Amino acid sequence: MTEQQTWSQRFESALHPAIARFNASISFDIELIEYDISGSIAHAKMLAKTGIISPEEGEQLVEGLERIRQEYRQGLFHPGVDAEDVHFAVERRLTELKGDVGKKLHTARSRNDQVGTDTRLYLRDQISQIRQQIRGFQAVLLDLAETNVETLIPGYTHLQRAQPVSLAHHLLAYFEMLNRDWERLGEIYQRVNISPLGSGALAGTTFPIDRHYTAELLNFGGVYANSMDGVSDRDFAIEFLCAASLIMVHLSRMSEEVILWSSQEFGFVTLKDSCATGSSIMPQKKNPDVPELVRGKSGRVFGHLQALLVLMKGLPLAYNKDLQDDKEALFDSVKTVKACLEAMTILLREGLEFRIQRLAAAVEEDFSNATDVADYLAARGVPFREAYNLVGKVVKTCIAANKLLKDLTLEEWQVLHPAFAADIYEAIAPKQVVAARNSCGGTGFEQVRQAIQAARSRSKNS
Image (cartoon, rainbow, N blue to C red):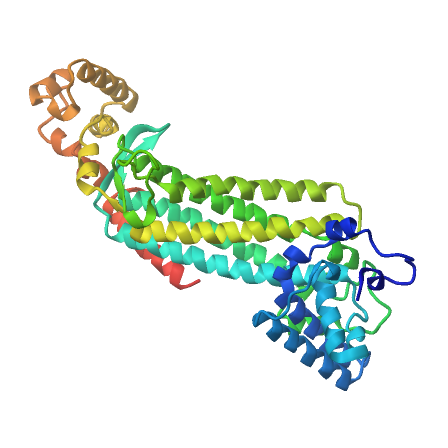
């Protein structure tokens, strides 16, 4: 099937070679070949079931398509630019194998509903795989959290030391972000799982097809109610890219923290050799390449989302060739998200080590327990705003004297306010500061243990 033979007798000459290359998508949509074959098998079975072709012809088509699948898996199927796209490539090979019967496969079908079906089958599988990866990453977070419930780490707001928290509590924040990602993908899956097959080019078909039968064979949850919408809808792809972008936001935020934590200025974690690189000229360096790459790759996924939104915003109904450009954005985003999830899972599982002693020292060397002093007074009847202002003055005085709150004598505390007693030192000790925040969802150790248990339960039951 040459370029000229691809089209009907409406055309008198073949495409210009450069235009043929420009027009072709086979270089990237070959990614869809297994899905194209599965969709074509369902279509062939439907044609035979409805009597549009004979049962024998249906069997020949299925047999030929399965052979092409095996040829591809064995590395024996290499269509070139002359095939234009994966759909023509498969049909051409089928015709080589089965003769004129192969030419009947495209009956009652257009490439428009065909590519829409293939893309949905592909994305449905990828969503399932990404959700499994998210669960794997969450399992690593939970394991780390479980062993670090009483490990303290400075908590920050505005990148300023705020209050000490349980390291487990900090890690569980990312568990929750990823859980929303997991749920979001599940919701999107439902809208991906709708079959456009049978919509034809845009208006349906005159043949007595059974769209619900092909949907059932392909495990779709339903069919598009409107054929024009069926061939031109890419909302599902945009929704996926939105979800993928949020996954990358969460991975990038964690990456930024790992980068900071591994710096000499923070020194909270040590990167292991298996997940770090060195400098070409500075032998002392150990670079956090994994989180830096994840942070950088987030931009390309965001870019693909923007590109697809711009691609779709001006398209009149129904199918337009512009939609050929949805696949590279989709494929690259899927590969990027999967690669970043894998890399970050490995990094957290085996690529870094928390420096517990450094973390313990970090929560002892600042004024992040100042709120607890105000709470101490408030619990003893002092209006909180009055206590807040008093503690602010105390912190200012301590800074001028190069002291921490724990360095003040009881006499100094009582000069500040008679409500202070000897138990102030216990109240502002970092472990007590954290343990005391036992409100629902807080960083108190008991709350964190309950949160870990609840998170494991959610993971197992979904």
